Image (cartoon, rainbow, N blue to C red; front, side, top):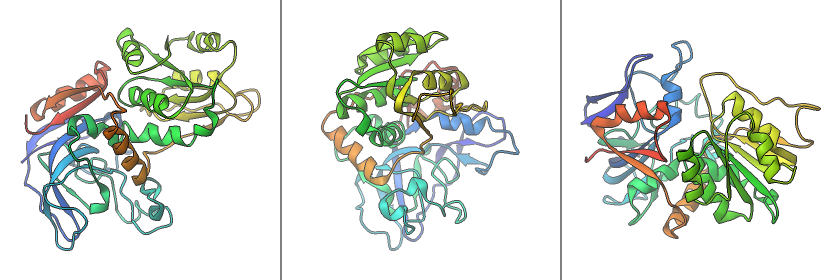
Length: 348
């Protein structure tokens, strides 16, 4: 079968022929119908050798949708032919956090050698993939897999980040979204669906700001050196109750801290290969402004997102690529020229 793999440190991803996998005990084999491409992949592929821990060759893709085609011995809870998306942050399944569905924060996964697909385990950028357990599958019914697969990360991560701050998003509040690409454009829609907050979106190009407006942002601001002042001007001198940074570079983190109001939440979601950090302490931030870094979301939150998708909440902007064009999609991801989420369809 064909797969997209990262094979050498510092090299570009390659489309290769590998053996079709067979599901082991308790596992499920999917015929992949759609796989998302994420900035996290680019981050991983730009790590130096001494920091790279994901194994080679690595079949990429931690956003996966597919059709169940085979069950391994003892696998139960899902039927052959079911259309599903894959919950990516696999955990041990039995610790106190996994028991709550919070496998994204499993404290034992690393020591047990459990890794997410595409980030240690073979991922979804292949014609077939093995999922370690039926509990990591969420049926999607008649939803379009291309439009639904980004919800597994690009939707789940901002959904988790926003849910924890909903108590601060009351009438008259504001939320700032920095970076309106794959995650950011979904964050805007989640904010509009779940809260009355005024949503202000920041990005560096007119195209990205136009996308933010199209999916529901109340205001858009160019993300430059004057962004913080311009946001506060829109808010009458005040700051925002929630700031979501989907870039994670030092300039955007600085902007996020500068627009945060008293008792606000600053959530840094994006990650770059250049070290960046928020400056926290007296006279460096608004009083009682909390800064956090989330990782993905829970299994129950992914189920909730799929339910919202069935209600027609999301307008997921995607660009579709054939398997052969996946390396070019990664090039465009690195260049910042994608609109929304890049999705590879193996059948093309």
